[in-house]
Length: 349
Image (cartoon, one colour):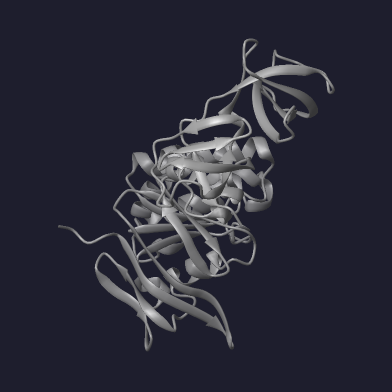
């Protein structure tokens, strides 16, 4: 069995006496795109810098293709790790044109090989003919493409992306993110992306890690993070949702003010345990014949959908996504039903 492209085992990173990454472990298979997601200051960029060789580890180890490159007393130089890295600020050389930026890491190759590689990559990223333009002559999205081409030019074993789309406007960020994801998958390039944008992480990641205070809280598929969060922090951090009070009546059944809910997951607590149940907007469905009645107290137009905040007659407030052609007024009363196939519950605090 081939070793994982990246293996991180129980690493700790410190700045001075302050621990910023604590006991983090994860692995990424060849060709996968993985994301580290979390609030600012959670340690995700430090993890990226440790993988790249810019920061030492004070405990644990980092291995690339089975070879240890970082542990206490060992720090293989960044240029010997066969990595590509794309920074938040692109880090292009302003005095070099597009061609020379792309081939900067290929100085050991002859000029003909450099031209061939640059030409192929610029065609892939949609910038053929821009070889002699300079970074200041390019848009933000074009500069990001050049930074990616430069990272790909060295044929890396792993590409590290540090908040690569955060400086772009929302529409361009989504479009470029999809294009970059398609490119990386088509070339089977193993990738680790650091971001604070949930949509970006879920759209790109085969696996996503949720970080908090230097620790990896859950390393899972986007689907499982949304439907099977490991704890309250993940449940609250991922997507929208509200907690309603309930009582466990069976290992997979909860009685709430919205009625009885039955899910696929069995909980370990005894019947009668008070629980808090997470309800997502997609769990609350508009239904003219529904048993629940609610008053609309807030609405947010999202294009194809409208996110409604609803106050139920029994007192709970929930969220629901309606198709945008169902445009209701604030104060209007509507009927609903609960359609929660993935019941997520935590023991009541």
